[in-house]
Image (cartoon, rainbow, N blue to C red):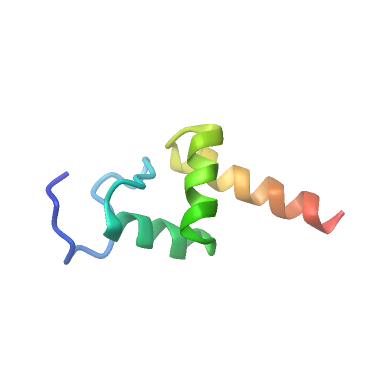
Length: 65
């Protein structure tokens, strides 16, 4: 992906990138989490957007129990 901070979303919406500031901001806002929480999720499950979303969904479900 070209480094273009004017783009609002990442070029590949199937992969979560935490290496570019604008993508870190996009994904953090999308999942409603802090940058550090997003980085921990990617470290735990990889950079698949589906897996990261499931991670937060499951974590949210566990917190409500």
